[in-house]
Length: 314
Ligand code: SF4
Image (cartoon, rainbow, N blue to C red; front, side):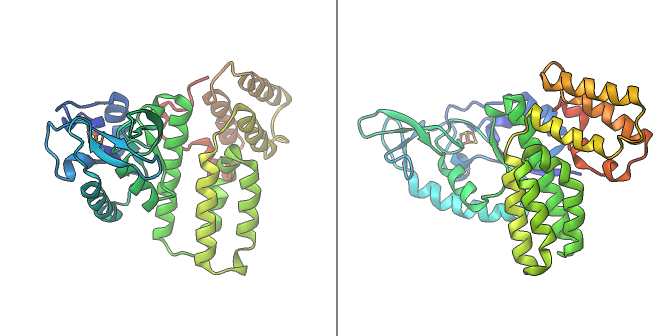
């Protein structure tokens, strides 16, 4: 399943920065790059500025700053906004499942970008000009920054959302009907539970009442809840809860020493002494051994390629 992901061009090593340099990120380019097709975007170059060029910064109100050059004060706000509004509409045809922004950039930064007051005092409350237009255009799309993706938990969360979004899109390509939604929900139930028990209950209720609203309304509400749920991070406690749920499906078939082994490994994981991949691997072993088709179909137990090693951290 190839996934298309937007990315700030300089993160792939393209020499597009103001000083003619790049910000190559090896994990994004080499590791994640094996599983996604990137759509690189450099707002400053694509809106017509040269390489090299004068550095820029955000100035004014954090909610609606202007983009001006740092030394000569040339204002590029209108040029950038005009281009950004056109570019996000062009990106509609790319079917993106997420975007990775370059942090701290006045054009591409997703959050905490410096905005300077008239007196030249910075506050870290801004959003890059293109990033803001992009996120307003695609409010539900998973987005992250290069720096935050070095945090193993944020990385796992972002990549997981990206894969779910892709599956959601694929489901929408089929016919939009209640049966397809029920199937999608059934296979994602445990994943949703591991992120948010509250959303797990709400989404189950929504699907159960599906016939009482139009399909459009149902799908819209479900999509919002789905992306909201997955944006909440899992914790060892939430994962243990989901895995106990898994165990509940075949605990009668487990021999007492097998049950003991599972409970012990869950407890060691809960104490953060081993990574999530350990109990998940053991659980998958018993699921195969005791032939549990419902559990075999659960994306929670194999949400993304093992090669990415996203569940290997403690
Ligand atoms: S941060 Fe954004 S605008 Fe700056 S060089 Fe990278 S892609 Fe281009």
